[in-house]
Length: 253
Ligand SMILES: [Zn+2]
Image (cartoon, rainbow, N blue to C red; front, side, top):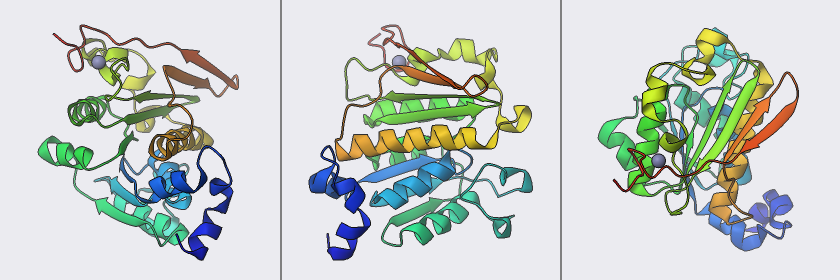
């Protein structure tokens, strides 16, 4: 790190759990952010600002007027642009030293597997069940930790699934695919269909960025279980999540 970098990251370096060594791990780290919308916006901006050295931002959608209420990496002038490209530009404006790659095609199959395997941490910032299961399976296969976030209406949640930890559950342990297919629960709905209050995605996305920074820098201990936030009541809740031995993704069967 040169003097400029030491100054830029000084407020993190002065934190004992991060220190110079943790900041250097961040600068050498690579995060894959899937979805550059409501959650992906604060994730991309905070990770770039914090000095995560390499970011891959994946989103095939274009910026629409109804996105701007909450997807703060995009400005009015970005309407019609690809979201990954738009978020890349916003993150680079914050920190030109960050190496940011935009993936503008829908990420699935072999491309998803390769992108996940190349990353130190994956942040699921999508809002579709099908994408969530595919990302979870790819992270389990490549043994890359997954920071999962969701936000809808006034409610949000976060969980970290670390395939390197034999005791860690996976997304499919928490939400078995057969239950999700029937469309039970809020999370089966998208923000486009159900609405979402603007700062909620900032809250959950910032929490995701924090967990990714901890995982890459080595600070603290990764979040365990499931945290949910009820924005109308202003209350967090925490739930234990156990690994399901019969899970179709991470189970031994
Ligand atoms: Zn599982």
